[in-house]
Image (cartoon, rainbow, N blue to C red; front, side, top):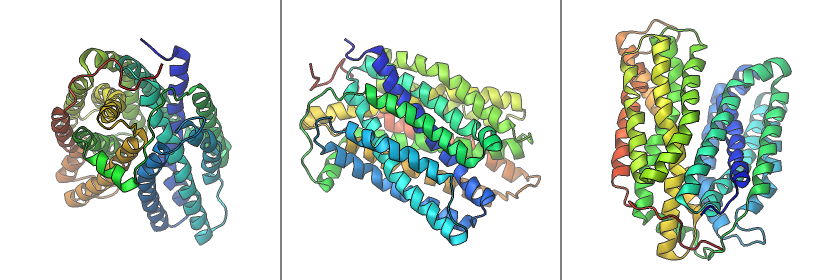
Length: 429
């Protein structure tokens, strides 16, 4: 039986619009803004972004363990979101209002970004960790995960597609303020609807002991390895598509938006379908089907030569990608349930934190793989590419993600949780 109202599910899910809006706007435009618009040396911004990636990864398990041990009248997760969302919005705004010039501007950027990292992880990790605690049945989780991803895709579209329109008319600073305001509005809506319903034993072990227990969980290890390779492909797609459209299809730059739009448009209705399928088939079987479809959708990019055909292939990617967006948190939630049955302790924070720590490196692997392929294949900027370079660029959207997804499929095949109960142990009245 459902334990949360539809309004509560929808309001909680809307928080994912905020998460993806600010994350995508930051990832897509911050380097361009500071390097191309403000004129900061590319090497300095690259160094700052490497530091940002490391700090962001390390903060995930730290805040996860901290929130697992938190005791308050509002619960373990809500206080961090409640007190973190306004400073997070303020820091996101501050990133787009630069102070100083030259070296001073670099230090301003690094300082604000690191403070932003702290608040972003604190809010978003606790938002994610609340998911399996608020929604306890497979039906609820499938439904809410579908709604979360619908809101998340809308946030992605706003964060990626709208900035040129907004900063072109209003400027970069106002764009940051508007996006921060939208994100804060949906964060408030989410927090006001959230309630930690389940009273559980708090974790009372050290950080290192918690790490040991987490990695002794076979289901988690297999899940996070599969998830790593899936997240790697999520990073490869937007990075490789501009090279593919420019040098393989030899199409205008706006073709990037056509391909990305095809992925998103196909994904939005499919998240509902996958939400229904996971209730029927169970998480393990459904994720294997989603990975398989996602992998097969990569193969047409070995041969397509027209933008229209490439858009159809991209829509195929959106079908499988939607399933994975829905399923990853559902799988991790049942791992947390199983861990509670085994240990008597709920540790959503550490599990989501370690998952975040590990999959973050998929972005780094993507940068390394693309760099190696472009260098080794003889790619030349703004030139007609040789056959080896063309094949190398095609492989970034086909062979490389296909092989990564085969590895993910193997890990999910050996994932040991085969049965999903209707509710979990420890459900509150």
